[in-house]
Length: 35
Image (cartoon, rainbow, N blue to C red; front, side, top):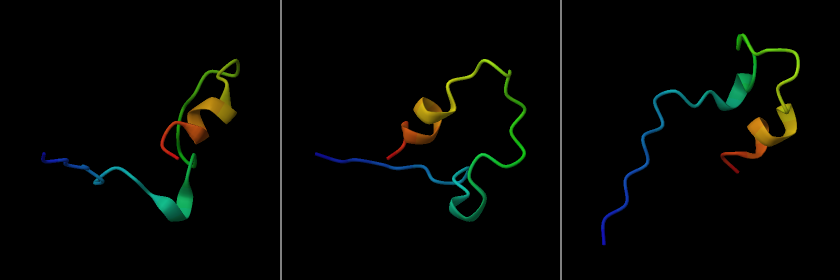
């Protein structure tokens, strides 16, 4: 089995900075989506 993780857009030092999200976005779910 082969697994590929494309991590070009993961910014571990600035997570959630610069994202233009609506105010009603569930940020806890977005932050935890990749952990």
